[in-house]
Image 1 (tube, rainbow, N blue to C red):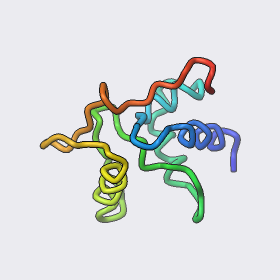
Image 2 (tube, rainbow, N blue to C red):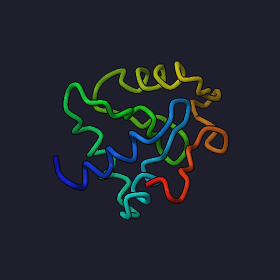
Image 3 (spheres, rainbow, N blue to C red):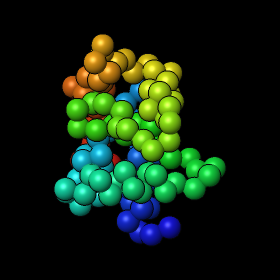
Image 4 (cartoon, rainbow, N blue to C red):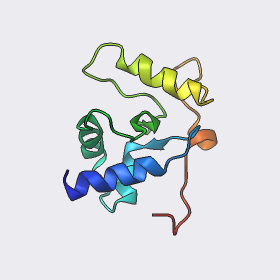
Length: 107
C-alpha cells in the first residue's frame, strides 16, 4: 500500500459512526487539496477484509457518488442509514448536521 493511500485510510478510519466526510475534505486533511478524485481511487482500491469505513465518504453535495458496480450506491446508503444518518427526498445528507470536523490536533 502506498503512503498516499495509507494517509487516506487513516483519515477515513478516524470518522466516527453516524458521521460523514467528503472526498475533498479527506484530500484537504492529508494535505492534498483538489485531489478529491484520487481519494475515490484510493477507496476503490481497498483490499478484501479491510477495516476502513469507506461508506462514510460522500461527495461535496452530501450525496452518495455513483459507482461502477450496480446497486453499490444503495448498499452505501443502507450502511449510512444503519448508523442513523438521514437522507432527504433528493437523496442528500445534510452536511451541516452529519459532517465530521476533526479536532485540529486529531490528525
